[in-house]
Length: 198
Image (cartoon, rainbow, N blue to C red; front, side, top):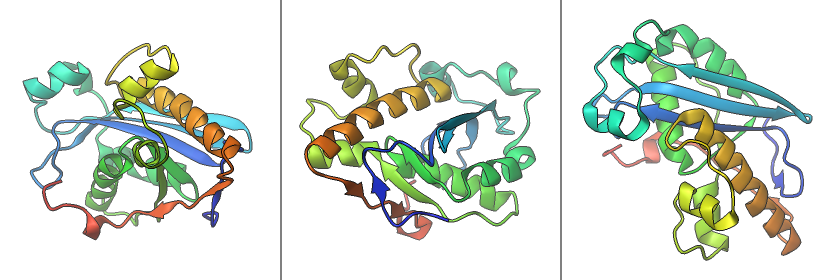
């Protein structure tokens, strides 16, 4: 059951997530090639971190960003094979991502293509929170991390970005709480409202 609001001084019952993909557009056939999630449930952390076979070639321009090759995913499961596991992992939790709609658009599309019922997705977007409440020189994840002195081990790999997002979120939520913003309202992900260019 999704809580009505999120208490900013309690990092709990959340799933931090990130995807790497074969492109930027679901509508143009881009697919997930890596999915990482970190669940915090009653203080306990659980990790999902898998390379995904997108069943299509990974374009060079995408490889140049995330470094994932066709050879790396050749013997990995397709999303269809892990769809139930993914849906069960996120069901009932508030999802957290940086530019979260991008990730959720891909996850929602892949779950739908797998033929299973997608769980309702409620999310907090650290990019939106940074823009609304803070004044960073740049709101890119890596730039915020650098400003905050967060040591980023690896750029543009899903699990590394999940860990960075979690650390950035902890700073944002903690700062908001100290400023008197005790609660944030998770947004409901509605795929129909997204840009047709996604």
